[in-house]
Length: 118
Image (cartoon, rainbow, N blue to C red):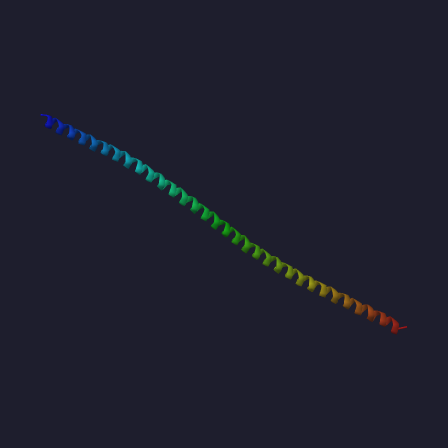
């Protein structure tokens, strides 16, 4: 009878040990799943932050490039306008000089005519 009791106690101890292992295993797996979820969220947040930083950098480069292109385009338009203004002023100045020369020639002809008729 003592041997049966010792055998029963040994079986109970073994069963308790297996139950404790099972409970600890469940707790470990639950904690591990939580840790994996936290790591996943942390990695996702880091990747999102990195992506957003990359997008911001790309937007800045694009903005700089566009403003540079617009600046070049504006400078080209300004230089074209200035050259057109210079040409038109040159034409106007030459026309004015021609008119003045024609007037001078007429005045000289009139003056010579008066001198010759004395």
